[in-house]
Length: 129
Image (cartoon, rainbow, N blue to C red; front, side, top):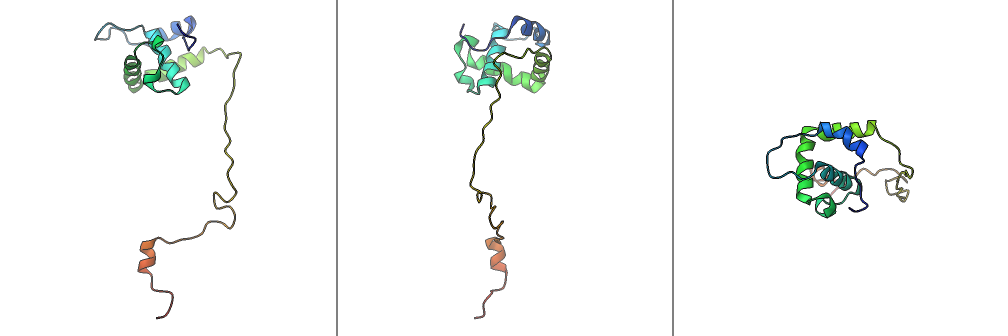
């Protein structure tokens, strides 16, 4: 197994009762592996196809995520995990600041009123012929 994200035994024991059982279909891939893969994709932000093979087939990972999200199961899973969460020792908060020129939003001189072309065509001409 790779060094990616894996559910701990305590986290798995907390969410295992929430999962649907006796699902029809082909042989079921291990739920713990698949859920670890789903959380990996959500944390890293990669495409489903780019999920490492250690978590199982990418189609299985997506096909478990999709109907469970429609049923609202992920909200219950994340609430359960957050309730018993342990803060990691290497916690960091990421933020980005983008600088923009002061006139990028029309700061100097304010916003100029420019009527649309349709309104200009309807108005009488400003000069005398």
